[in-house]
Length: 303
Image (cartoon, rainbow, N blue to C red):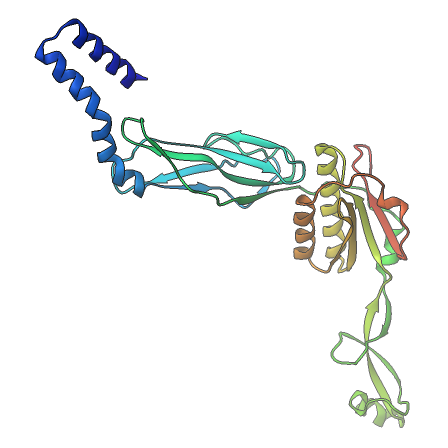
């Protein structure tokens, strides 16, 4: 805009006054853009623009996405905004560099530069920067405490069974030797004491299916509660060395995860954050052969 005003002004001056200085001024103003472009070619080609953003954030974090620009030559004018897209809901937002990311609710966001460009020093000629890299940001829920159902305690005590194939085990059962048993299992010292061949049988715990279910739907606040409660229950069960399954109704149908350690639970929650909502129905209506089952809802008053 400033250049256009200068160009118009120099044309008017030359038209009103045919003196040599008016002509020189018009000539200088006319060739100035090309001089600027010539001086800007190398800086424009060497400018690098990158997006700096964390991969995982806790819900409510004040973390920002920042556009980092670098150049070995004097920095030419440049512009870029940041586009964030919620994978679950397809919601889109446009942010400026350094503005707080949308972390008020848990979710999975795709973050990328929106129409990045670099200009010559006068800002008259612009060139788009090819930057199609998309970064993923997980806004993770925090644990939401709920009251542990009293009937769960009786399911935490495992029944023991002989470990298939034998091998190492922390617990053993002593029994008499039967034809066909492996000689490697014989407890020789005890056999010598009692006068009969005795076995040391490796045992392993056995529980019925422990199952957590939920429907992937509802408002953003309800989803925060569902995944927060899922995280809390997962940590509670894992702290007691309980292996369990998580099954969720999503737009893809019922998806299932077996949870043996915290990393499994974290992967499950990250997967749910990137999955579209279930359109209809409830997994509560489906029956499973489980020793214990708990359905996680998103209601505020749920314990």
